Every structure is written in C-alpha cells, then in structure tokens.
Length: 431
Image (cartoon, rainbow, N blue to C red; front, side, top):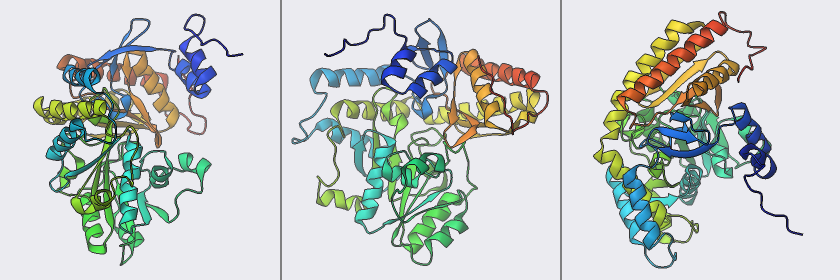
C-alpha cells in the first residue's frame, strides 16, 4: 500500500532529510543549529524562526545577491511565456544569452555551450578536448572541478576520488602554481594532453598562484600542443575583482568554464565558452553532446540578465574595492585576537580564505560566525580553511556588520584557545 506523503506537521526538516535525503546532511544541519532557510533577498537569508543571516557563503553563487529584481523579472517573464523549449525549433532566449556572455568573455571566446552545473561544463570541455585527440588529462593537486566521473578525474583530492576509482585513465595531477612541474608532465610533445587549471583555487582554500603562472600555462600549452581549459566556475564574472581570472594575465584558453554567478542567484546555469576552433566538433554534429534541459529558456533568461546586472551595476569594480577593504579588516581582526590560531588570511576580490592550524579550529570559527548571523563556507579540499564569498551588492553597513562579526568571533576563539591546540586532538566545540 502506498504510504501517505509526509507533511511538515510532526516532521522537522532535519527528520525529512534523514528519512528521504541524506541522513548525514540532516545531522550536519542539526550541528549547525537546525536553522531552516525560508526566504532570501540581496545579501540576506531568513530562516523559519525569523532570524536574518548575512550570506557570505553559497559557494560563490550570490555575486549579485539573491533574488535580484531584474533577474527575477526576466525569469518571471520567461516562465509566463515559454519556460522550456521543444529542443527541435530554435529558441531566441538561448541566442540572446550566448551573445551576451560572449560579449563579456575574453576576446576570441565566442562559442557557448550552456548546461546546468559547473561539473557539466567541465564534462563538455573534456569531451571537446577528446574530440580533438587530447586524451591525457593534466590537472592540479587541490584543484576542484566537480564530482561527475570526468570532472572527478580532474579534481585533485583523493577524499572524493578514492570511493569511485577507477576513474578516467591517463590522468595526472601536478602542484598548482608550478609551471615547471607542468612542463615536465607534458613532456616535449603535449599534443595528446588537455590541461585544466583554475586562476585561483577556491575549494583548495583560496590558493593564489605566483604572478605569471597562467601566462606560463598558456604558453606551455601553445608551445607543446596541449588543449587549455580554464575553470572559472567560481572565479569568473567578477568574483576576483576582474571580469575573469584570465584577464589578470591576459590569457585566452581554448575553453573557459563559467557557472555560479551566471545564475544571478536565481536559476542554476553554467557554460563552456570556447574558441571557434575548439568548438568545431559541436558545430559538425549538434547532437554529439546534448541534454534535455541544457539552455532551457528560463535559465537563459537568468543568465543574460545576470551578466547585464553585473555590467550595469559595476559589480566587478565593487568586488575589487570591497574585497580589498574586507581582506584588510579580516586580516587585522585575526592578527589582533587570534594570530596563534591562524596560518594565513588571503584573498583576491571577494574570494577570501582564513586558514587555521587545523580543521577543528576552522569549524569553531564557522560556528561562531553562524552564532553572529553570518553564513560562510568551509573549503571542500582544505577543511582548515574558512572561505568567505560575500556578494558584491553588500552595503557598507553590511560590510561593517561582517567585519564586526569576524572580530568578535576571532576574539572568542583567542580567549577559548589561549594557546594553539594540539592538532592531534583537535577541538570539536559547537553549539
């Protein structure tokens, strides 16, 4: 007999997670106070109990904040008229979104494949490389490119890879920021290789390479015939205080990967943006790599509007100036109150990482910020790093609120741990 559908009465959201989603995720939510999101707007997330949190997490999605009125309006218009397409006839929203994205992409990247997530964009890039004969994957240690099989093959963290081996063959990982190591791995002839790197490693804990690294990678790929994929799913569209990490060093990859901020904080969407040469296999056979919901009109409305909002509201410039100020304030707060607990504070634009001496301390800091109504993330590939990705629409008052919460949290940790804890027996803490 079919069981009745569960209702909220008598079932907490955590209970429903445990029963029907991930029980581990349900327990984790309880550890974070059992808060249940109910609405969001701009820099704020509100919960069912009426609390308002400053959202500096979301894994970098909310550059333009949540529910930006222009993006919401574009999506609502599309939903009322034509939310999904036949997949046979041409759809004008896809053409407009592609032209809008290509207009702000680095010069020469004018062909777009839309998809639903960053991992899907990685898969598209790897398949384009394979079509050109580049079967060997060269990625970086600590890099994060997603968790589908191809993307996971490139991801440089055994914690996520080990349960699913064997993954794609002929995959190697070299130290991030080390162009000489990449040169050795490619060898004199790299024409069978695809190189995939990030301008700044987000999930590795906001790891910033030395100046000139991306130029060296691009030059090596050109010299040795390798296919160059630049993963800007987290860093692109202004997160680093530049339109693209590629712009910081004037490089143009074969394929640029876009996601997160492309959603406008409203509809999931990502893209692989390629040169005409790199994209040629998808031109020859338009059905060689497709999916039912790729370039869905409702997502295309969000993507085009998101790019226009970033452009019109000068959010790239805002990310640069706000990020510089926040990085300085956060570093000062940590240096004043708990310097013995932190290895380094680093960042670029509105991608900021605070690296503690162990993951337990990072967890304590995250919980202290949550207690003060600020949401941040830990780094998936570096659990000792708390990562802040504030929206570029953060007001000056909200920026002060954030820095004050960081200051108070750092002071609390400094008082709780007057000496660096023994990392062999890290703190667990939490409320």
